[in-house]
Length: 192
Length: 138
Image 1 (cartoon, rainbow over the protein chains, first blue to last red):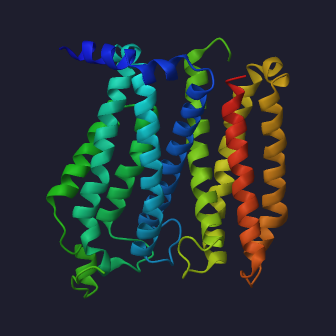
Image 2: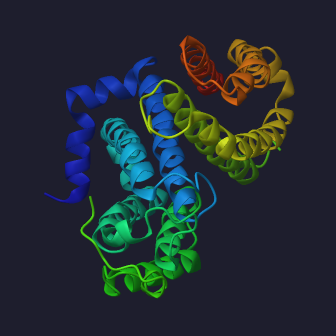
């Protein structure tokens, strides 16, 4: 069975047809989708701005991250569920849409962000938790994350390549305490 | 404006990015006032810290909103959702600059006032967004 046939089958299932043809349900699900994106992007950008040392400079990074990111995940979950419903309803139409394919790839790449961030820079957060302006690597991670907000609305190849190079750099430079923190005599401690 | 699909889409993207920022800031400040997040950090400081971003995203949204509307003024004028959105938007603005800001600026951010302000503010901004979504469907 080819991908197009799978899309056709999804497109023709009962719930997908009902959603596509409904004059009320479709706009409602679409509105939920947009609001969920706003929730996700808005809350994660607050965390990114904290990592850049622009807002909430006096609040510890770990506290901002731990209390704000659950909201981001809630937005993501809502977005994913409503997005899957909308995609199922228009599966055949979207199969031929190049913008939709780019969007899926970007979504996947953006999904790697928290994974890379938490397994590298964030591991040493206890060393720079209270810094008004976190170390350079954390700031790079924040810029990568912010870039995806712009990317997903208007993809741009050079910007994407630059972001990916930065992320590879972050990923392969590991989770050691940043040099700027060591210079201040701070040793890595297990995070709380 | 109404004849150019790419210009409309581009400005709409700016409008939506503004929405995300505004929504994020409103949510963080109001959830803090409700005591849901960052309860151990001072609410007035969080509100003060994020205020420039709230005002900035408001400016972005208004500036990008004007060309979106100007392309189809006549259509919007008779659109019930658009009228409702503008009414709610003015109410939300008035509430923010008249009440909300004073509550978060006062030295004693405690008691029922901040919670009530946060609840009203969340409800107002959410309904502005919902009415905005409805414009296209009417």
